[in-house]
Image 1: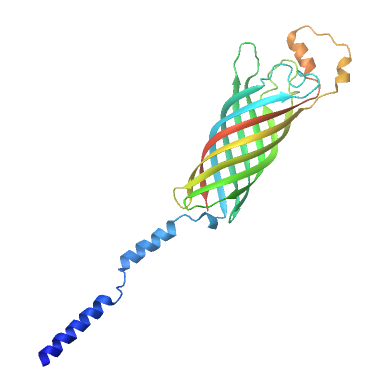
Image 2 (image 1 turned 90 degrees about the horizontal axis):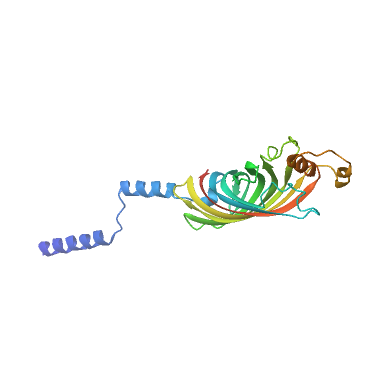
Length: 245
């Protein structure tokens, strides 16, 4: 009787032990906590910054009465070159606010041209909307700001620093970031720009005054004394590295 009771007790205790939930080892719990801590959560970041590099193509179309009055025939209507950019700003859940600077470098080495190396600089304020999908985050950005061309004052002898070309830039961009770690992301972006550019100068009426012109460069310099305007477009494909905190 005692033996039977003892066996029954052992069986009951064994069954209860098998059904009872087992506590996870301390080491497993610690690993899970570390993994959860390192898992990217873009919605919690506050500050972001990134650098980008890629290729940009620009196309310009003058809308002045004199089609040569913007650059006197020395400025190419289209060009493609390497681009570098830097951006930084703040994030509030799905919304990003920041600023971005870009420079694109062009080289006009055609024998009939004197322009050589020139650049397109932009400095824009930027607003973006993002869709966090775990490590992958698609986004849309809209921006606008200041645009200017560099390297033009060396194009034609006789104008010195008189070829001052600047204006405004408006941009829309689509892309995505992939979070390699909690604080580092790799991204790809395609963007399109509208450029509204003006050149400071005197009125066309002031050019009617007689002036001795002896060379082709002097003639171009005379044309470039007038005010001129142009509208253009650009597209860029870039890759970048971002830091998030």
